[in-house]
Length: 137
Image (tube, rainbow, N blue to C red):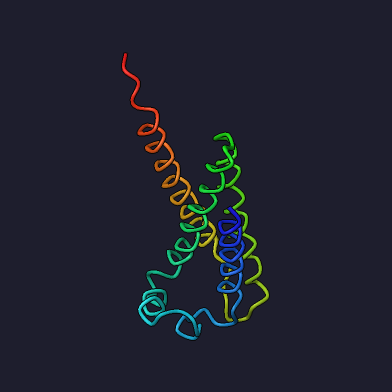
């Protein structure tokens, strides 16, 4: 489980780093593959690109929640917490002259988080159905 914690921490750090680099142009981020940077720099993808790391963060957080057997109410708390991370990242952009605060980025971060969490919830549901068999009336 420690590896999941590590990946969650690295994912949050990556979100903050990418949100707070001085330029919104992703081709200047040295570690991004060219095809990712080209996609991220297309005008139509400016807000949507925020969702991508949050899908993975949601999936990892769902993995942690499932492994720890937290109740489903904690999944909602996790979605809100990940959306709060998106909001903090956006607020930080207010201090950067070339970056713009965007409510849509916060929304896309929340949507990405929910998609990741729901994906893991489906995996958990299916694995429990397979493990315990389908209940028949």
